[in-house]
Amino acid sequence: MKITGGSADACAIADLGTGHVVRILTERGVPYLPTADGEANSLRRQQACSLLDDQSLRRVPALDPTRRLEGFAGWTCAWGRDSYPDGYQPPTVVLDFEWITPLTAREGERQMLGGRTVFLGPGEESNGLASCHVFVVFRDRPLSSGNPAQEIVRIWVHADLPAAEQCRLAQDFASTVISKLPPP
Image 1 (tube, one colour):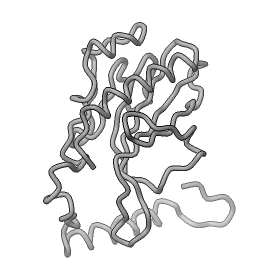
Image 2 (image 1 turned 45 degrees about the vertical axis):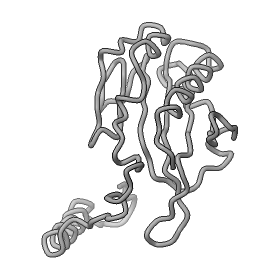
Image 3 (image 1 turned 60 degrees about the vertical axis):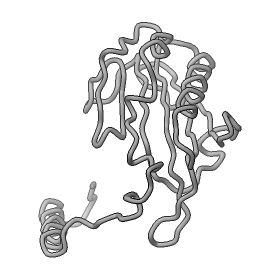
């Protein structure tokens, strides 16, 4: 948080907010999301690192598929140079599961791939290199508030390749992932 002007103490504000959250969690516990328990096909039950194999990943120049970083609950997997938390350095392939507001053209070009809606687009340039991502819509799933949301799989390729080649790889990886996903 950045405060400009005024005399507010950002640390005191953060401490107050943290104390409030800790008090609520202590009194009520961590909220339980029962919807995933009865859903054998939920992305929450999938392991991101199991969705792409070494042979596929070797198509990314200089990527070592044996170097991988598995994220919380297996919902994220990063292959290649795992310099996290400083950011993923190329060459890297990242696959993760997200629950987000419905995707739009802002996230990329909408296409159909393997019977699923995907959004394909160039990523932000980092370290002088372009990147490419594919968002695979797993299913529409409203938030508990009733607001629309989608469960998605995001695949991100960041390598020393032209952007178009990275996008071809991202699409190929998305096809592989789609073939391994349970039905929505």
